[in-house]
Image (cartoon, rainbow, N blue to C red; front, side, top):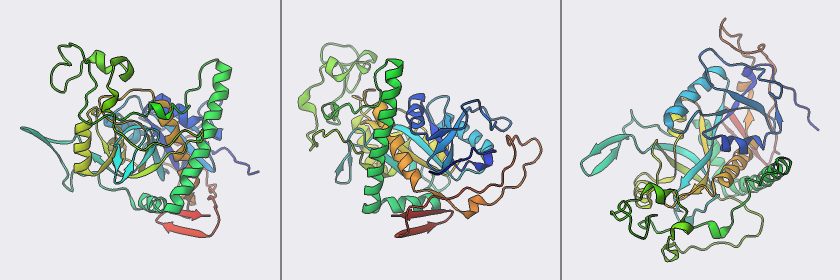
Length: 391
């Protein structure tokens, strides 16, 4: 069995994970194979960095995890800039958590618990408000652009049918491990497990124009396309949302062996919570989006970033928190499955130069190289600074 040595400096971390919510980070840490900070943080942080970190190992990779102080692109941008200043050797950063999904992508239905992976980010709430319409700024100077070449190479591999199947199979295995770890922790703490599959009967998609609101007299809900705060905080069952307004879709029966479908494409990011089925569909069609979330636009310009998020609602007025924990778990599982295929190449293993005085580089400056993962030699793809092996 391979033996792993605790890193001696921050320079030995090439992978980071960012979560917007503590519940998202909880799901990720259940998949850590080892923690490096059981007795306190041994690595420190650079001057001016206000983040707190969790460090450990996922597979063969040293990983640093940061939890944002709050949701939104501004919090993500600030925290990611700090992360980059402290961990200057990062090659790949995952933004892991939950999102609102677009129910239909090409000819495929999207279901709660499925996972989306970013090929590009569109900041859909950044632009100009004209009388009667909003125009997203999409000039070359304002665009966030596509992912860097390394990440594009990564995604090209996973868009093949064979590798997508391998990724989904491995993610399903990790999901079971996460659920098992949580069940054991829940038994010790005498609480319920948080990451169990809610069930196909709870996977409900309403027609885009059907608004979640009081059916009886309500001064706010009686207005066109309006919902009062009380209705927004009430479940569909309690509010009496009509079953005949559900979209009819082919659903597979539960077999106790859940496997997320994984969709790769453009993700909409902004500081606005999307809670309208009609506006969701309009923006998604206009910009070819597969999901909506609130942090990617902040992190995208700062680090080589890959957004991996589980669909917890359909970004409409019927959204609720029932699927959030499970969607966080499916996203964490897909992230670890992707990381299994990532190899730090020779360029990342070269000895690092000694830091300038006052640079806050933590304990020591290691020149120890990090060995790469090997997954067989039937397929070998080299892109930029990353090497991928398929078995």
